Length: 133
Figure (cartoon, helix red, strand yellow):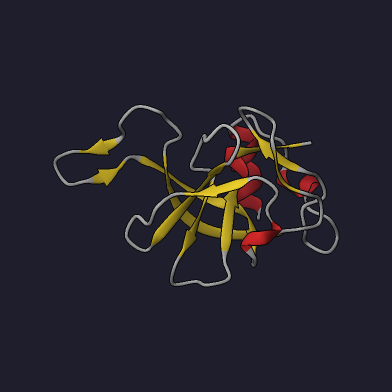
């Protein structure tokens, strides 16, 4: 978790350890960066330190036309939820290969996370892509 702390401080984010309760769950509400819509209530997700690639959060076309790949970030700090019905306001994209990207259901900004269809009970929300209140 030390690398994540350094990463958050470098990006101007708060220390993620203050967002994690003693039982490893989110201690604050997780909300959309753009519209403030609630994504998760406190205590509903566990912290996960897993490397996942997410395309950039942009409206413009971020697809590399020469090979069909997306430009984006590899992020390591996520909230992990094991049931899609745990979310308050999250939408899912159509399948992109074996991935469904998670977006804010109200303003449709995203992706804020992902669900790998091979991992039936694993839904990830990137800490860098949301706010905590």
